[in-house]
Length: 72
Image (cartoon, rainbow, N blue to C red; front, side, top):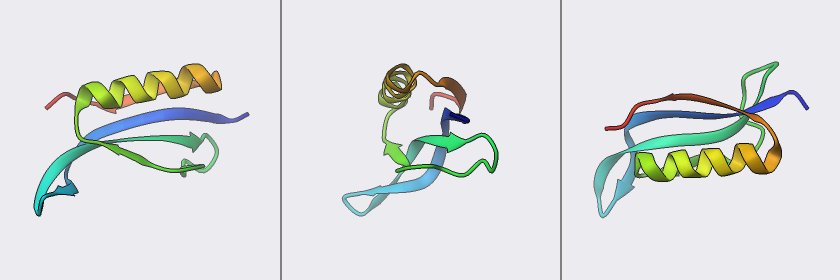
């Protein structure tokens, strides 16, 4: 399988909560050939949750984890 789990962010205005824009971190399984998401792109409103989700996804799927994210 030519894929990896990728975490990026924070993306400003990526999520709206109660009418206000909030930064979000994106987590997805992407194809290594075309760099496009293979499945759902998850938006997490906290860095810690994004790290937890990406680690679990990489472990469960036995994929490499690529992090391009910083805490806010």
